[in-house]
Length: 474
Image (spheres, rainbow, N blue to C red):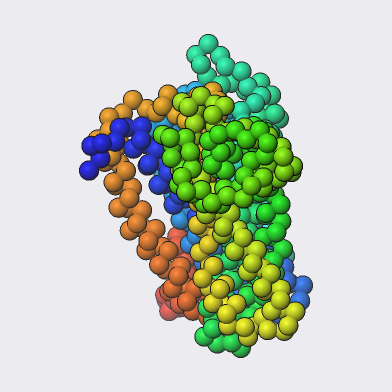
């Protein structure tokens, strides 16, 4: 079935498939870790049991999402050696250390405190447990810092030289880490994680409010989620605009593909709302557009000239149809998130936040929207960078390992089958946990009925059968 594809295209499909699966879990766990820290902090501050119940409720879900994110990330990283060996050789002196910094500073921090966070409540002091929860939340953000720094350097490579072997070698690490696109991409991605988590929490809260309007836990989680969305959604739109202007400066071809501008517009570019991009003909067919507004968005001037893809070598064009539509999916969902936030503020102002069923149905329908938006954003970013892995310097066709198509196809099919079975089962169990409403006296991961008392080591003395002690035998 893959006879018409070459090894390069199959390797790209495989990486896109695995990273799409992986991306949804960190985008959820980053926001959820911070939400758990807020819940525990509110419990310690106010003493209200509802915050503790919600903390334990979401802690079990976080444990599963975090575990699936780690597993999918490990699998994804091996592809740098199997399918992208040339890229690893050329860019390894820069990308390798950045990935290692992520392990040393973030993964070790998360791993060191995750056990205390999951199983330490009741075994350590409240302050120490809260410190562990904060450490895990901070660790997830530090992880995002290094991963996005590496990705951003591939988008806007600076601070390096190229040696005789054609390798990118570091010249200024501060410039590499804080490359021109990194601050915008970091803030944009972290805010996207918070929105993703807020939509999931809001969707779960809405589901339980539709079934039992008086459930206190559902009320609190829904209120907190809607508050988050109302604040973060407009902030994300502002940051997205800043990120777009930065991309226009450093990767103009990507922006032209996003906007569908095959041709230059010397007197002001239109905003193309919809249409069918034709890569071969270099035009957007059946375009629905608003005159001049494209220039207003891109350069904040109705009459500002805007270059099109016709100013670039056609061999360096990204694949416009994918970038064009993925960008619109992301923006469209962002607009719906803003609308949800505004409606929640209106309902809160009228005192109907827990009673307005249309709002609850909308929040429930928007529950998965964050995941779709982050995947669409990733597709826009990565496909828009093509045909380069290191923008303008190393082409994707020159980065792939010397593999035959059947070998890549076999591993791709294996990944598809295993991923859908393993992660499908994990996601199904998460949905099962979400389907149960939060209750008073909620149990955490360490308090379930089937948890092992000890996994290894010497049995503690209080657990020894007194009839089998030396004293009893005497």
